[in-house]
Length: 94
Image 1 (tube, rainbow, N blue to C red):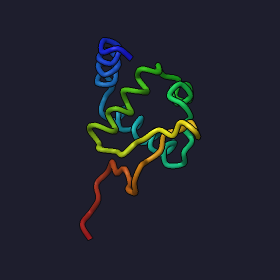
Image 2: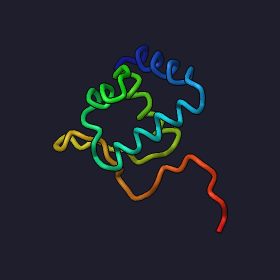
Image 3: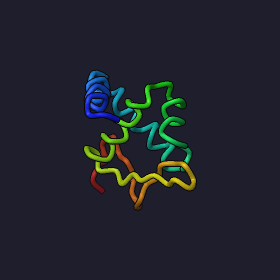
């Protein structure tokens, strides 16, 4: 992906309202947790979005949400390289 394509995908992702951005991240998270993303192209097809946008969502999750996402080329899927949970709501103190 060229810098120009990446910038275009980022701008497109930013144009989504906040709820849509969170919804994409939550849905990507569900697939990543069970190792069912497939390749980047597979993931884009599952969500019926452009491959560059799928990559930008992954980059957002890695850079901004600090998700430890890696890719297993043997299994051809994205996965979390560490334990944890993506939380997107209010968590009351215990």
